[in-house]
Amino acid sequence: MSKIFGFIKKYSVPIFIFYMLVLILVLIFKYPSPIFWKLINHWKNGGEIYLEPPHLVPFEIITYYVKSVHSLDDWFFKNLACNIIMFMPYGFLVPLFSKRKKWWQVLIFGVILSVLIEVLQGLLGIGISDIDDVILNSFGLLIGFGIYKLIYSVALKKSLD
Image 1: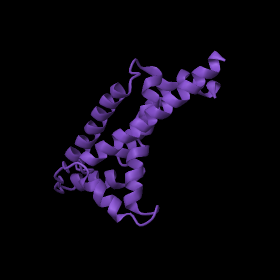
Image 2 (image 1 turned 60 degrees about the vertical axis):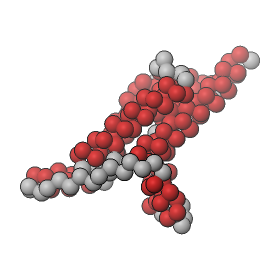
Image 3 (image 1 turned 120 degrees about the horizontal axis):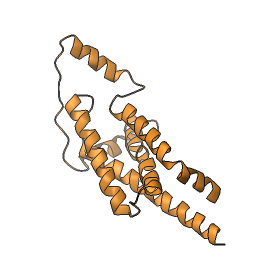
């Protein structure tokens, strides 16, 4: 376990850069979905940009999605899960290479990143700015940070033995 953790720690910066590129491709450019390119073609052909007003009421969309889930295959469940899962690597990787080793430090910078992504999605018209996405992303990064702390403590204990 400590060898794997050591390997990830050693290469945490390139792994984090790769993770951020994937995050940008998926959340901003909607890759692999063709949504982004359809929007670009729409703009090129003189189409108007419709900007959905942001959802700023905390837990409104989360509550609606939770009530709408009937199975693990539902889009509602997948949306909730993906918003959490996509930010878990952030919470795990940041403490590996930065001076930010406390949960609240990782949370602050993760929330800033999440808000930036939400604002960009809203301004570019490629998504809806949603406070609930920020909440779910934050929960995901805290789970990732918890995994980091758990693995770090196990690896530290093994290295001391």
